[in-house]
Amino acid sequence: MNTLRFRLFFLFVLLSLTLLLVSCSSSLDDHSSFRDVTVELGSDLALTPAMFCEGYVDPDTVRFAAEGTASVDLNTAGVYKITLEHLGGKNTVTPVTVSLTVRDTTPPTVAFRDHTADVGYLPKAEDFVVKAEDLSPLSYDVTVADPDAFLTSVTVAVTDAYGNITKSEQTLSLNWLKPTYTLELGSTLREPDLLIGVGYGNGAFTAEQLASVGSAVGEFELTAESSGRTQTVKITVADTTPPVLELRNLHRLPGKKATMEDFIVSATDLSAVTTELVTPLDMTKNGKYTIVIAATDESGNRTEAEAQLIISKSSDYTPPVFEGLTAMSVVRGATPDYLTGVSAVDKVEGTVRFTVDASAVKLDKAGTYYVTYKATDSSGNTVTKKRKITVAKHTADDTAALVKEMSEQIGNEFKSKKDEVLAIREFVRTIRYNNEWGEPDPTYYGFTVWKGNCKVHATCLKDLLDLRGYETNLIWLMDKYTPHYWVQVKLDGKWYHIDATPVGTHNKAPALMNDEERLYYLRENNYTTPRLWDTTLWPACP
Image (cartoon, rainbow, N blue to C red; front, side, top):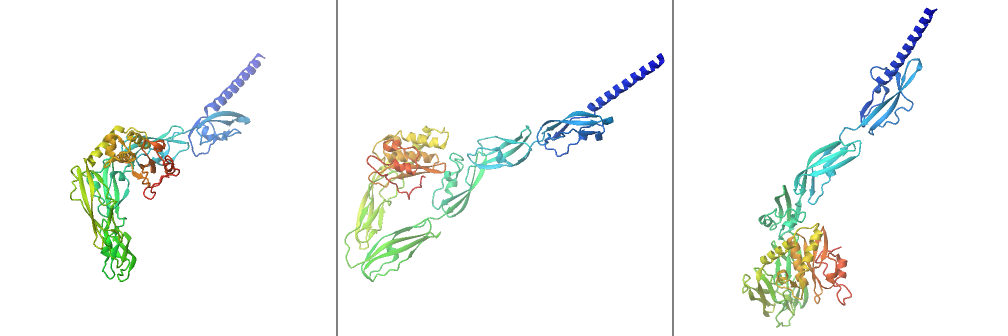
């Protein structure tokens, strides 16, 4: 009996140990036969239970739990928990939890490029990128090696949301020179005309280079280097200006001969001029006739002008009368124009031809001189008049040096071009106002006497702005009884009125004005309507 009990007990213990070993084996199998998996963001693969099985387990005995992989997004980085079901013997099901890690270790795919822009450009990394691709949002960054150079390297970095970076070294080229420029024949080529921005590339061209362009129609190229960037501008010299044709009226007796040349005072142009009588001449009938003459230059530009032909038996004994022979002042070394504003008018023929004799004037020596004007009408009546010319002690070079000295006092530390223009205006407004015109050189007068009227303030302002490369115009009122002068300046591609006169409504006006504001602040004292300027002579300020 005891032996039987012992055997039964032994069998019980053996069975318990077997069950324990099976349980341990099953538990060990469930945990050690599975693995966590890591995949790259955006992977194109199908998730299967076998991916998570080690070699110790039959993949056919493993399945996803009911919720499966619905929460998994292979395009979003993160750690996802997945429940597997391991099918054991006698339909036993053991749940197992594994991890799927989706991570991004791939830098963005980027196609880079060099970039060219005009001076004043603020570098943007996107300008150096042709195409950038990644599964996450991208950020861009750029570092410029030498911000002051016109040709420099830049480091461009493209970073995804997970910190993966793609970098490249590219080249930034800044254009400081216009690619093309059109110059009117006979005009003076100035360096600022060729530069894109004020203050960039100054001094790149020599005086000889600039002087070599403009004397003939054609295509020219100038090449220069500045701050590491060599550029070429193509200059077209064009002749679009028609000849200047000045005619005079003629008085003839019936049957007297007259030719086209008798009507022509001058026909001038930078190229050869041919003239043509458009209206036939008939000298047989009394009367007053309009004669049309045309002048054409070598570029085909044409000018037509009219003159009066008077055929009459009456005699003319009255000589012409000169107009515009007011006293004239010039700086030493200047080349004055003795013709501008001067005319000889005959009561019968109207405007007639005249000659100028300035041989007595010594432009290199200060003093008072006289120029002789002589006019003769077609009836032989002659008039001779003298004009007073005063040559000042200083030269144009003296004025230029003085303007440069004033400019240096103003300095160059400004946040913007607008601030610079306003600072120059304030400097000129320190010149006290009086009624003196400052002739023959209002600028020299203003910066030496520190007094002057509106013209003195205007020329001082204009000369300072011109020295710093701004495009300007000296502008004045049409009203001869209440004259006024001020300046137009081009700032950031737009024209403005700017007045440095420190008195009256001009002192109250905004520093930079459009046309409407300029008109408003030209009302003075009892003027009820604005005084006007000739809008055909100067650009609009909208």
